[in-house]
Length: 157
Image (tube, rainbow, N blue to C red; front, top):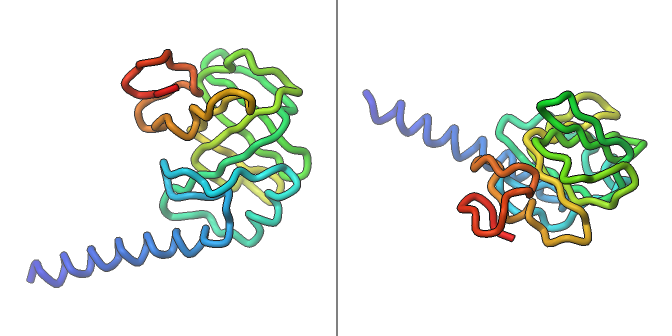
């Protein structure tokens, strides 16, 4: 009796993973969780790349590059906003002294809030002219927006 249940669970897990891969196959800025994207999306590309994309059952990541339009904090978290058409919000632990107008790369867990708002939470961000810490840091290891020092077990620069 237990084998059919296990087989069913295994097949369900395989099919759900395949669905996520199919969903991002033609969307180069999206990737499976913790995996590098084939390319970072620019603000003028994100509406097209995210069009008709359903809310994923499993985590997928989105990688963006562009100019910050807003940087705010509530005292615990930092909110980095990018793009004007479809606004992309990166929720992170550190600002790394980034300011509106800075060109940055951000990557995080994708969630579509509505037609004009995307949230990346958790998210890592760094200036576009700095090494790509966001692609080398594990979001699960508690890296703080690419701010960990060199040699830290969780992040590498």
